Amino acid sequence: MTVFLTIVVIALFGITLWQMSKILKLSQNSANNSQIANDKDNNLQGKLMLAFVIFLYLLTIYCFVQYHTFFLPESASEHGIDYDQLMLISMVLIFVVQFITQGLLHFFAYKYRGKKENKALFFADNDKLEFIWTIIPVIVLAGLIIYGLFTWTDIMDIDEEEGDPLIIELYAYQFDWRARYSGEDNVLGKANVRFIEGINTLGLDVSDNYGKDDKITNELHLPVNRKVIFKMRSQDILHSAYMPFFRAQMNVVPGMITEFAYTPILTSEEMRNSEFMVEKVATINKIRKEKSKKLVAAGEEALEEYTFDYYLLCNKICGVSHYNMQMKIVVESEEDYEAWLKGQTTFGEQLSAQASN
Ligand SMILES: [Cu+2]
Image (cartoon, rainbow, N blue to C red; front, side, top):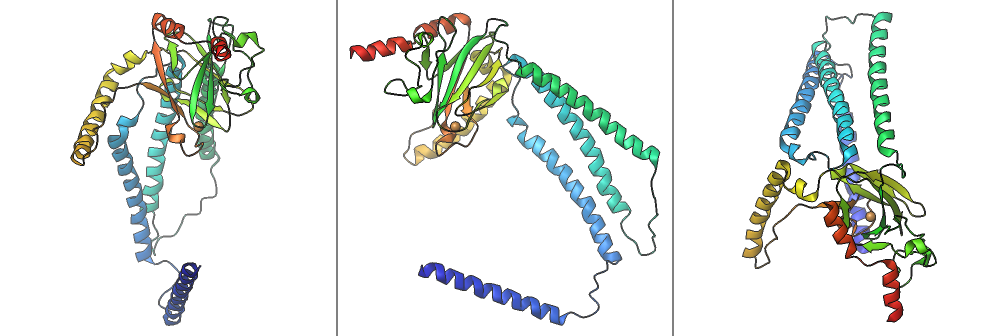
């Protein structure tokens, strides 16, 4: 309390001094400090305008050169290709237009900066000009929006009948993920967080026979080139299932089931061996090696060699361990996937194992 009061007193004393200095300044002011801009002010402001836009352009170029390695590689999902195309067209268009208009705006502010002998031209309106600069953005924006809407409906259209999709539940809780495979029948058993008890950590309804063959895993394995429908459920608060390599993100909301579907087209192995990833992993391991040297010198353990894997991440800040809320995704051949799934126990088996204990 004493510390707090001392800080308040010092702060108030500081403010008093600052206010007093302001009053002093005001009282010294004479008539030569006019509020009306003169040629010197206008010159300065005009040049600053030009300098600002040049700075912006340089900053943009610097960011591209410095950070282009953070861009994602080619999409590992089918819809991601359309998504990337939409993104690219939109960004290039925005970028080119803004590059030209910002340049002109700032250049004109510099070129026509105030000069004592200059008089502004009174220009009321020009219907033709206004028509042109209204109709062009209308057409371009309408085109972009319609294109975006078509892409959106394509991506978000989840048809369970079409193409024998795999049904998997993604279950989020503070701070981890579980995947639930729907088993032989490809139907997920009913579940509700109210049924959570003992080993039934996902709250499956034990009276629902569809749930007996469900398999709960802590890794997400997906067969390549088969459509997967994710049904997402949250135990506690809002999470977000984020799979950047598959261009997929969907909020996971308590009390409801959200859905997203995609078809993986590149296996983990294929992504690992892609030119982009080989180069990226080499860079990461170079940095790790450097860090390890320091760690070892300080008597600590060296960092492990990094190998690439897909991950499902949480993209909603959901609490203290949010940063570590992730689940490995393995995209593999149909045979490898089947073999892995066979090795997982069903919910029914888990229940009987518990009963026999
Ligand atoms: Cu989360």
